[in-house]
Length: 119
Image 1: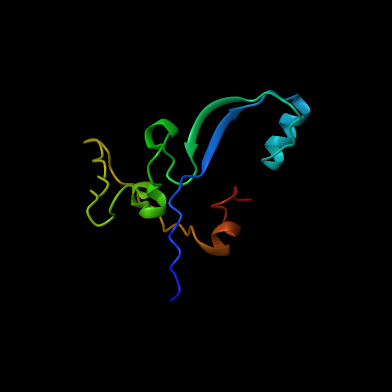
Image 2: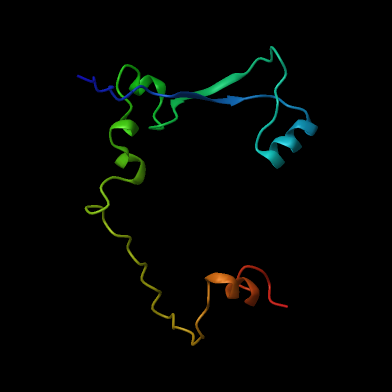
């Protein structure tokens, strides 16, 4: 008989860090989203958390990662039971302005000036 592999439910720990850099490295990091750190550089750990479930180390150490079991907590719970957003009521003295329809999708929206100023 073939044995079923058990699903790995362990946390994937990551550290939010503070690394002092030079202005040149800061520019590279801003442009590329990454940079190379110096060897033996001391890094200050701001926070340690699980990359999957986004929960702090001290709250979930020794437990299974909830993201690997069921990740509904990351999307705000069960979508079918969650309350809908309330539409704000306009002020009493507000009145709607007559306008045409605005195309916000597709290439015609980009060309017509929704994404950039009209010429």
